[in-house]
Image 1 (tube, rainbow, N blue to C red):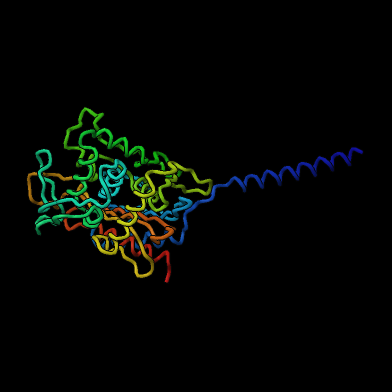
Image 2: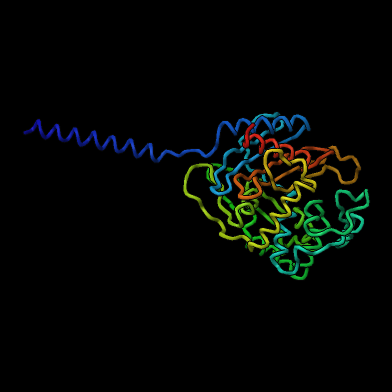
Length: 359
């Protein structure tokens, strides 16, 4: 009888032990990152950084529907991978965000035409310039053409028309669209909450509204920007980027009206075909996206020598344009000119797209 009891106890302990082992295996976290793709993206980014002598670069690939991060690569000035995955800084990718906010106000229409004149405009005592101001500017532009030309002036006109009399509403609209979310992502320890200089700050000045609309006076990480553009690809639904397999977490079920989302998607697709985003055009798949260039630091504003000025060249988009599967952001910091979000970051974006599609 005693032997039988001991035997039964041993069997029970063995079964319990097996169950515990199964639970441990089941609870083990599984990374979303595709290691093969990660290596290929790192090589593509590193090659471009060496070519242009960059200081820092980052490229992130995310699945649109699941928000699973399939590759997240950061390269430092020694052209080695770094754990600094979430640097917060000003961005050149704000124009589409501001346009969507302006469209949501109902005071700006996608069919509007804006006069950027000769590429220069006096704004609150300062001169705002478009990239081609030395060639006479863009003149009159439709809203979509403003995106395709990365026109600072058209963006400022749109935001002033929508929110010039109530600048606080612009920042409320950004929050309503969840721009700058998420503030935390498991697996990215150094991610900070996005920061914006708004009318609630004692440092606020009236001209900051227009400059904010073009990406200045804020600090935001590339993965937070990607989350916004992924929502555009996902018909307005913003989900939290994840680095470990698990349930999809919805941040905002609808960041803006579907009609305005559709208009912005149309502009992003046209930008790659006809606009300054042509370097991102793939021969294998139709893509949509936007380029951006932003000056983020300067050692001496009194000199014409800009060799010590730091810029960020960026491109963010998704593919295919119909039923998007992947969204991608490329962000590259470098000192001195030339700098181009389309030609530099856009070229990396295209090569990553082609890599995912395959031969």
